[in-house]
Image (cartoon, rainbow, N blue to C red; front, side, top):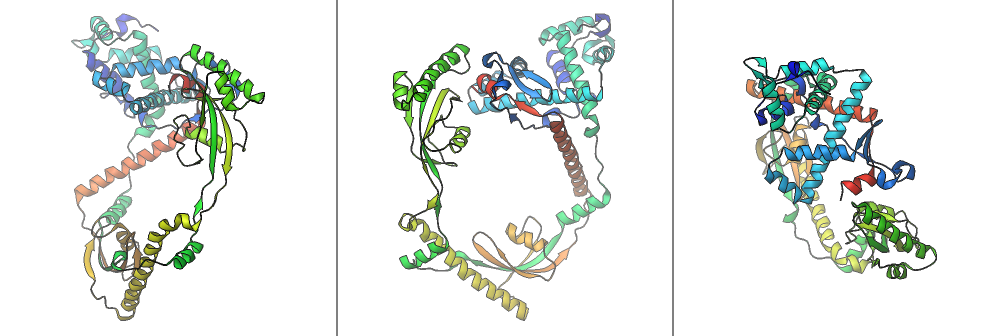
Length: 486
C-alpha cells in the first residue's frame, strides 16, 4: 500500500526513527507491550491430514483460524537480528540454548500479534489509510520546521531499510494493538482499605520467645541388622519400572529436503525388512543403518542417549514388550525402536538398600528423640507458664527467625504456645504480643504502586487466557522440527 507522498512523508535520524516505531514512547500507541504475553503452544498431532504434503507444508503455527508460515517466522527473525549488535548476534548463533530461547521469543511475538489481529477483526476494528497517513505526518522526525518533509521521510526509510508498506504495516499493527489492548493498560486504582490492610500485614511486628531443639544434638548408635530390617518393613523401597530397548537409526539432515527424502527412503527399506521378520540388527546391517542397544532406564531416568528424548521415552513407556514402534522422526534422522524387556516396579532387596537405610534410620531416631524433648518443654510451658532458657525476639514477617517459625508466629493468636518443625530442628514457640506498624508515607506509596501493578498484571494475564481460549495456538510440530528446531 502506498500513500500520497505530499501527505505522508518525513525523516528521522536512523536509530531515533526506529526507536519511535518500536517503542512509541511519546505516544499512547504502545503503552502496553504485547511481549508480556507468554503464550503456551499446543503441538499438533501426527495425523497425516494435518501435515498434508509433508515437505510442501510451510504452515508453522495456527492461531485460531489464521496461519503463520515459515517465511513469516524467518522474516520476523531476520528483522529482530538486524536490530541487534554483532556481539548479540554472535552470542545467539554460537549458543544453542540462546538460539532456542530467541526462536521462542520470535514465535511469541508472531503469535501474540496474530491473536491481536484476530481479536480486532472479530470486534470490527479498522485502521484506515487516512489514520496511518496522519500518524506518519505527525512524527516529529519526519518534519522540517514543523511541516512534513518528503526528503526526511525518504532518507529515514532508506537509512533503516524500510519501505512505505512496511512502515504502514508497523503503524497499523501498533494502532490495532492499542485498540484491542488499550483498556487493560490503564492504571487500576486500589481501594485505601486494601492498601492499609496490606501495609499492616507487611510491616507489623511480633514479640516471640522460643527454644530450639536440634536433631544433631542427639547421639544415636548404629542399629543392628534386625533393627534395620524392622525399619525397612515399615519403610520399604520400591524400585521403579525400567525398560530396555534397542533401535535402528538412519541419520539425515532433517532441514534439507533431499537428505530428508533419502533418509526416509532408506528407513522404509529397513522397516520392510523388519516387517518381513528380520531382526533390527540384521535389517540395519543390510542397509547401512546404525543398530543400538541400551541398558534399562526408568521413565524419569536418563537413557544416556542423545536420540532418546523425553517425548520418545514417553512413547517407549506406552509400548508393549517385544513390539516395534513406527518410524520416529528424531532431530537428526529416523529411528525404529524395539522394546526388548519390561522390568516391573518391585521392592528392593534389603541387602541392596542397607547402606541407604542406615542414615535414614539414624535421622528418624534423632527426630524422635528431639520431638520427645521439645514436647516435654511445651508441656512444662503450658502447665507452669514458665519458659526456661527461651530466646526473646521482635520479628517481622521476613526477619528475626527461621521462615517456618515466622510463618507460625504471624498465623497464630497472641498467647499461643506450639511446636514448629523445620528441616533440622524443633522450635518451641510462644507468641507474646503484636504491634501495629506506624505509617510511613513513602513505604505506603510504594506498596500501593506494587499492588496496582499486581492487579494490572492479573487483568492482563486473565485477558491473555481469554485470547488463548478464543484463538488456540497450535504448532505444526513436523514443520517446526524441520525448519526451526534443527
